[in-house]
Amino acid sequence: MRLLPRYAGPATTVTLSDLWLRSTCDDTGVNVDMARAPLTDDRIAEFLAELPGWQRVDDAIERTYKQAYHETLHLAMYVGAKAREIGHHPDIHITWQRIRFSVTTHDAGNRLTECDFELARWIDSIAEGHGATPLD
Ligand SMILES: C[C@H](O)[C@H](O)[C@H]1CNC2=NC(N)=NC(=O)C2=N1
Image (cartoon, rainbow, N blue to C red):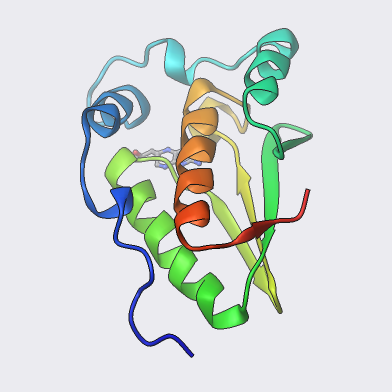
């Protein structure tokens, strides 16, 4: 079992993109702008087209990866660190050899917003860095 985290990439640094996303997606007194407005079905389809592998499930987007159980715990830790940085958090479901991420915007009444697609992009990047295999 790998004892040290495999991935020490963007999840541990705050980038301009994070700062933008944080100012757009968290609720620390920043005006809720377009990024947190519920998206129309057409816009959701446009965003999904840019995120191959993510599926819409009702008013959330989901993706599942295959990875050794203990590696999925590492991956969840780094995704959690990124979620804290950007103020937007996925549901994470871990079972044997599988990790599934589900993202929606609770503050918009559990509807899909731009924040969800930004978070999905980060999850893809971190999962790739961890060597997780998409199951789509
Ligand atoms: C106050 C806090 O920033 C907000 O409640 C954030 C926290 N993380 C979040 N994560 C997700 N997935 N949806 C939200 O609406 C959300 N809101």
